[in-house]
Length: 260
Ligand code: 2AM
Ligand code: CA
Image (cartoon, rainbow, N blue to C red; front, side, top):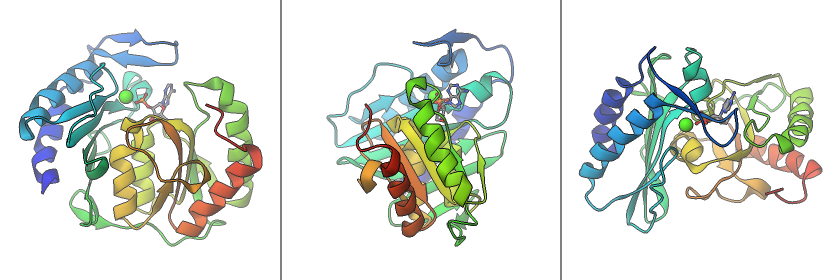
């Protein structure tokens, strides 16, 4: 099993996520930051995971290592929820996915301050701290939605807010934790039921997307299309296929095509 080999490396990498003494740098916009810890965690993971599968490639958030012409590709977010991390709040995690021949086959999401380790291997179920998890059976009306307003692309925030409002008015409530990977893992574990993000990067959803599927949930892109683990895209999730499709339909009331 790949996850057994990935877990100790990810846990060791988490030791580089210091609570203080890291530097914060801006990327393309003031909202988009990176810390010295993101860079240290990514550097460590690339070195150690590359040795697990010699010849494997990498798609990572913090460095231009995009190199996806390989049988095995690691898709890595060294810290998902960097804004939370930089403020000292707990909702941040390391996300590592392994794709074989273009399909994600293993996923590990580790949140040290929530003390949650989510894992999945294709065809073998999903786990939180070693205990099997599955999605809840709540209805759409009882569902808790996680979504965000597209912080990195605020030109889409108005549309996002209309879609979120529409779902919110017909469901139980809405939460925004600030880490897509954690929110998707919460969907897998039955803590929330509904998920919508206008535009995520592959490293935000690759590992957690497999964890959702292995927990019996549904995840897809705009129009219900399968997600491409190497391309940015809209991410829609549901505890059931029906609830996922209801979000797909809701999105289509506001958007006839992806705006990017
Ligand atoms: P990141 O920390 O890896 O950049 C979707 O919500 C994604 O947007 C999150 O997974 C997170 O990814 C990023 N994000 C969340 N809150 C944010 C904020 N306040 N500012 C910028 N990016 C944020
Ligand atoms: Ca990140």
